[in-house]
Image (cartoon, rainbow, N blue to C red; front, side, top):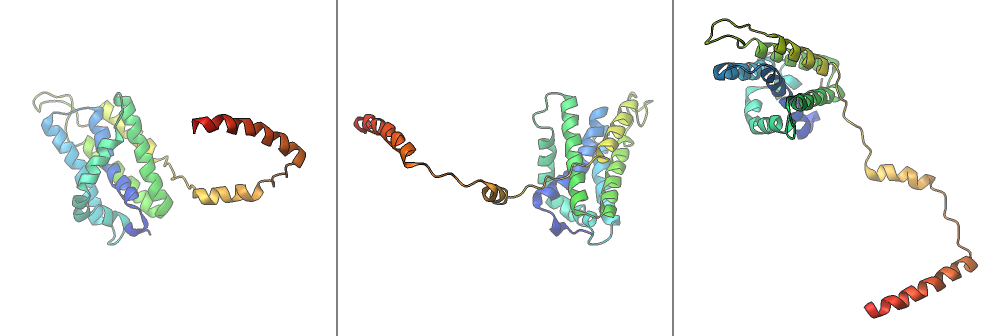
Length: 216
């Protein structure tokens, strides 16, 4: 079992933002009215908090999604959701960027957490998506008619599940110093320059030096 101390601040933010992205993804699939939007956004947040409370004390999900930590990280989470879709020219691009961030968040937990933690994290996001989709009706008029989960939301749920099934593992890059060391060791020694070959080069360089002198 991993602990919150095992993760960098950047990784923590990435993992915590993902459930909010799930909410945005489902909400964007079929936009509800003002009241419905509030219900849907709250459904995603409440799901994360409930999972945090129900998780084993000291576990990753318990630490990350406690009410205290959610409040402490609130500004960074909001910034993270904005950055996720930044630069997108249309809804398809925004959705693709959000799916990539979901895959990256899963990759962080897959790399540092246990299989049980990864499964619990994935289940939390699937549950958040379901709860958001069920939070408000779409397609009705003034609260009359409509369906709880329409076809667009069902498609969104399917796309989210597919993204969560394919984590993007963090790249393990060696420091530049370590990467250059083997190259330096394997490099062939430079061949000595013969004196006869070096002389013409020196003679050729002399006029250039003389031409440059007046400019100085």
